Image (cartoon, rainbow, N blue to C red; front, top):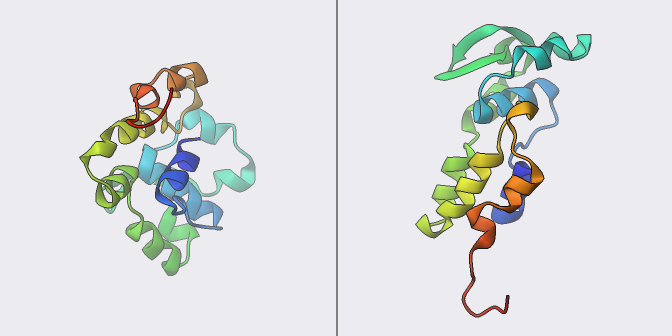
Length: 134
């Protein structure tokens, strides 16, 4: 849901890829390494993308991007801006409440994601907008 909100807010695709390994690597770049239980429970096809945790371009990852992706995918991954960079670059500090909501929601591990109720209770969604009737 956080990715959809980012895309609606900025008008840009957040994870712009059609390649599975690149998509997984982009998720890890934003959220950190995927939990082992998620990898262990995935299909054989998906498991092949993962290896031991390692550092790649300063990020902790389990996806072996260089082994499973073309050089163009690796370059696309390197150019990908994190949510924090995208929102702060495109917008001013007024939008820090939105960034707070995104960081609250953006968790790869489902057991660590907030509930829908918790998200709806976030301060960003309670902001009063001048000139609107509430």
